[in-house]
Length: 206
Image 1: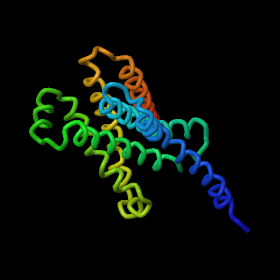
Image 2 (image 1 turned 180 degrees about the vertical axis):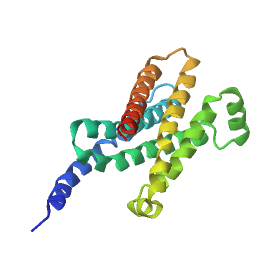
Image 3 (image 1 turned 45 degrees about the horizontal axis):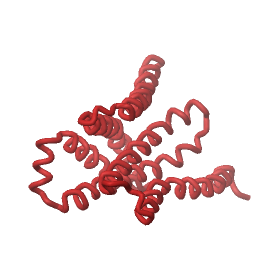
């Protein structure tokens, strides 16, 4: 007979497939808008903005899984964390590629000039670079290989989230449009604040 864990895994798999497909919606939307000529007057800006925003959305969802799991007791949510985190990396790759390819056409001099004029690009690039080791070490084999070091390494997501918010905030500063940065900034502060409070409570109990 099948064990309880095997039955639970069998139930989670179809849900993971649904979530996997659903999370492709932002990319499908960009493709659809491109095919139907609805990317606006500046298609590159639209794609850059969209991929960047969805990177932040998936980062926030990844950070939200642990608090929601502990408050609701739905431990199966942990099974989605790695997939959603990889989606955040995927959209970060699209965001970065759009900038260096379609915006700058691999013009290193232009990119260096951009860094001097717009430091938010440096902050965004730093967040992207920090995401790379997290994506590489996501497979279960790497989790087993790294042991306790894996958890320490993946705490970089907290710094990545802060850098992503800073990148978003500085990018919008030129247009004085802080509505979305404030919303996502508040979400990240709440999610990180929950972790600090949980850590202090554990320390107090110990």
